[in-house]
Image (cartoon, rainbow, N blue to C red; front, side, top):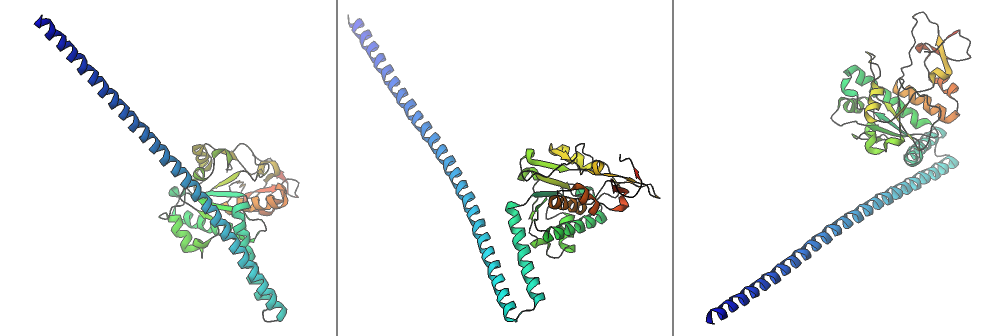
Length: 315
């Protein structure tokens, strides 16, 4: 009987121990679950705070841009009123008035183009394969491009993309172009795809199959920043393929024909600033024929169809 009582006590002790372990395990799991939930809540809180902070910063930047634009407009308006008073009182000459006011108007137009103008990027990612002479020529073309954009009534919002500060082109632009660092354009070492969605980008290349028929305010037009004296064909088309973006060419074949010349030379390759000249004129007039006739160099061996010179079929 004593043996049976001892066995009963041992069984009860075992059951008590198991119950205790079960309670401890349940408590441990409960505590672990609590900590897991706390960690999840903490992570979600951090994410929410991060998103909220990012939205606040975005709104703050937008507000700062609006404030800066208002300050700029007030400053320009104040300058205009001052110039009017000087002109009426005879204390300022007409030349001084015109020069100062036109400078203020130009600055205001370029600033406004950053929010309302058509977007055009010059892709400068291919400069590593260019010689120093070609780099200098490209720097000059960029200066002429910016100079023309300053003069027009409706300027483009210009971007120089893939332009690193340690690159030869950047140093050459600073050396050759007075005030380059103060140009009213966006200069960045980022790609056009870092700035805009791929579906909105149209890369203009002379080797594209499709002709550009019109200009869309919702699109971003990209020019290949390339001067290639060795004529390596289809470089800009290859670059567009790397970016996987839509391509188009100027409608030269649709509006121009070959012109017979002594050297039998015909080329559709244009400098960056020449392509920009044609785009600007088309946007202003709505006529490709007028834009091509105005800016397509006769030395390229093409004339606008319907001219006086005997044409050859364009190929």
